[in-house]
Image 1 (spheres, rainbow, N blue to C red):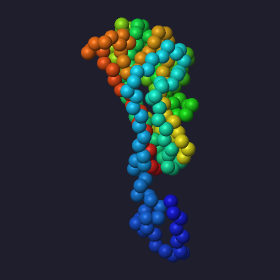
Image 2 (image 1 turned 30 degrees about the vertical axis):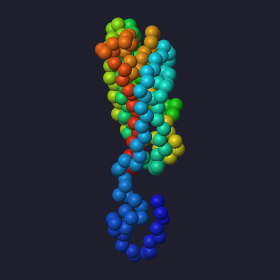
Image 3 (image 1 turned 180 degrees about the vertical axis):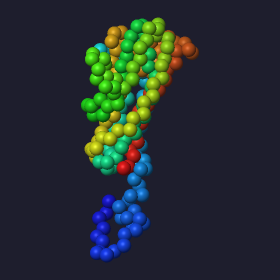
Image 4 (image 1 turned 120 degrees about the vertical axis):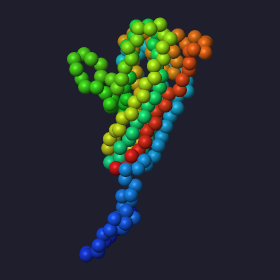
Length: 177
């Protein structure tokens, strides 16, 4: 923003402030960055691990900016499995539940006792306050308590018209504040 010097006694108007300080841009979307994951991913990890390809990086314009994170994907398992998912900024989990006993903190989870034919769709929206103008990476992580968890495919993944392949997306939008 350009710096303007005002003289003593000068009347400041909204128009002159907007012209000199770009206040009119506040509250608007500054930039949008998105990643699409059209391939499948699977993991048998029993602690949080990155979902390869489901991450995006943004460099906020202002340290006061908010970042709206939008995530969408389908997931499946094969058997009696619990799968946990969490949103991460850098190396810090965000938008997760409170700690309580031995319960896992997660953004959302899936509990299944099916035979691998079901495919659940998951969406997440979170308005973050990263308080930085440095490059910031947002990503999704997951883990299973046993067996294998899958992204963008059913657990059985049979070659059939009723066993879809899907795409995952993560989009971040800077909101100037």
